[in-house]
Length: 79
Image 1 (cartoon, helix red, strand yellow):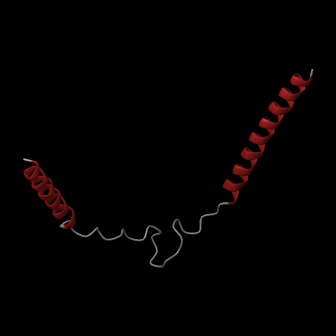
Image 2 (tube, helix red, strand yellow):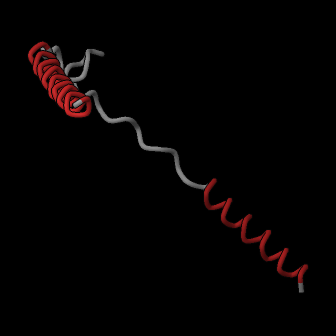
Image 3 (cartoon, helix red, strand yellow):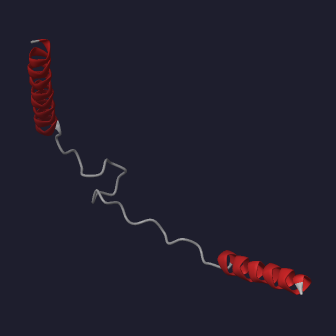
């Protein structure tokens, strides 16, 4: 009985592996999203200067808020 279970198990694994190997190749890559025929960057030459300024401003505001909470907590702890 145990030998039959082993044979069935091996045959099952073989059948599953044959199914995985017999799959077709992956689809071809999509066309160039930049819209141009060259290998330029995606999105063209979009400026990022203003977005970077907003990001830096928000980071500084967050750090200032954390610092003010830290100093407020340290002043109340020392009293």
